[in-house]
Image (cartoon, rainbow, N blue to C red; front, top):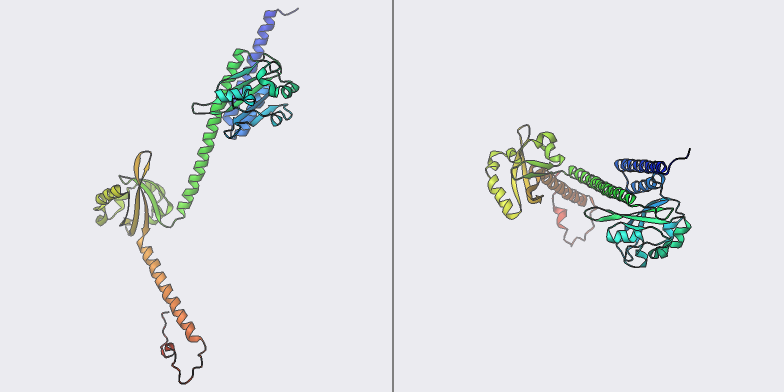
Length: 356
């Protein structure tokens, strides 16, 4: 029994619906699990070809230099050197009037329903028809801020993109554009986080305390030396106030120092901090006013002056011992033979001394 034309059409519509549904599902799954841009674009093209039934798909990015070429980023299908052999641009000249170039230049969908008859497609016609590609749809990958690239889809027959299919592919392109932007933002966040961690490790190697607090004294950031020198853990220090750590003789100067800092932007002053065990660290503090997101903050570097005194004393003793060693070495050299009438060098009559 033959099927009616109505039944055949209904089955065709159902098949198209199932194909589209599977394509959307696969595309969404790809976006969720994407971790690399190239892999995301290549997989998206694969879905369009293997699940969507299109002949060839590729994604290109606009080059901003001379020539304004469209640079291929990913593709899927039997292209056999198609993208390598041809040049696409997005400039308003002969090589920029393909659907790909027009979509990039205008930010709007561009469709060529029959590539064999399209006069604007002449520069690419021979290579395109030789690969069995007959119609082409180019979809700009746009976000509110910029155009990231263009998704170009080829079909093996003319008139292959009815309005409802163009609408669907347009929505998929928008989804890809936002997914691509989200992936780039995530990668940039990871890069910034890695750079921040690297800088934090560098600061932790510093021997002096480095910290940031707001104008009320609340600690916001600090390196390891800040809390280790005071005998606290990082969590404990976050609960403390910078101004409450100062002994009374320095605490009474806080308001004047803060006003001077706000007026000048950068000052140095002597201070001290209480340790957790109630002992006191004498400090030389260098403070600077910085701004973050419109809020004034104070960046400080605090040196333990008792350590500075120890280093100074060690340097003095080291210099004295070095000078002493030089004098001792001079005394141990063989004495020169001087004529009786000659005057003897003064060190010959000097007494040996040692600082060691």
